[in-house]
Image 1 (cartoon, rainbow, N blue to C red):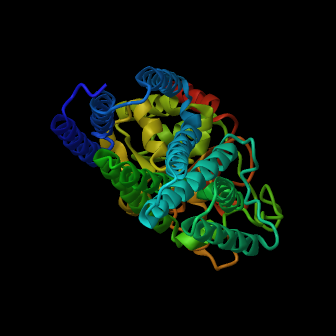
Image 2: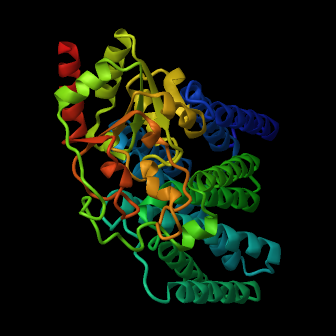
Length: 464
């Protein structure tokens, strides 16, 4: 191709970098997140066009066809995916980015190996780093996808000696890398890739479903770093900038998620939630009595309340009941009830899951409150309406070290005057333990599908 002069391509790359920065900045608020995504997408389109028309491509038709097919598949997938499947789509797409970086590194290694001349060690190191991080991100993201899609168990699939196996695998990867530095062959590089892919799988498999928001952030950062290293490998400035931004933002998000769970990153990666499930289910004699209720009784509580705090969880996403929640909130607001939404940082299965879910139902951003903002408000609330949230409301987090979620900051729903929990059953959450909130004397359990329960509440509130 080479239609565009090199200086113009670099200007386009600079504009792309600016749009990425603007996009990430605007993604920091629910009110501007949509436009932030559009800014970043426009910048990526500009980068693709500048690369396509500004580089000497070996087969422009083949590359153009790949871009077209990938673009169509991405657009169709994004439009058709259900909101409950958004986390696994993010994991899958993130894995594709890591896999692409590993493939580029493999291609560059083959080119250097076929050249027959002396190869600088810096080039080999760059290739090895890109292949390592890309392969780990690829396989780890696929395992995360399998867990989120429930093709694999969401429990922490731990096994005896897993840390020894992982350490041994890291030693093998390091040894193969040294061998490639001193003059390896393609078969050694293939073994290096295979070991990296296996490491990604073995690291993510033992991590429980409750840690998936953190895992996704870690893998996202890993993909960004792989892309940045690939940019150095290809001498592509925009890839370096984009990868660095993704890597840094993923690292910051990982830190924020870990802080929200009051757990270190090493604890998340090597001691996943759900490693040992509770042996008591459903609030037995030891746990105390459960108090079921009816939509009619809850409707009276809500209709005559002054302040109601809605606590959404993954169960809300599963039931696709966000529109019913919004309708109920509007109905209560018309009656003079103040309605707020409590958003826990790790509610759902990916960072910001509840924000995305409620935005789809046009819930006003001003009604969304972070954990730090809303916790002092629970003591003033007449009713805390928990819709499909489990571990993030469990008072067991405040107890001793015997609980898997001990020390994790939670939403203080039990401080409200009354608590209503919408849930299908008494099944435990991702952490595999009973929720002490359900047997609290002030808690009433409204069993059933969240969407059907909310529809019944709406009908009954209208009759009050």
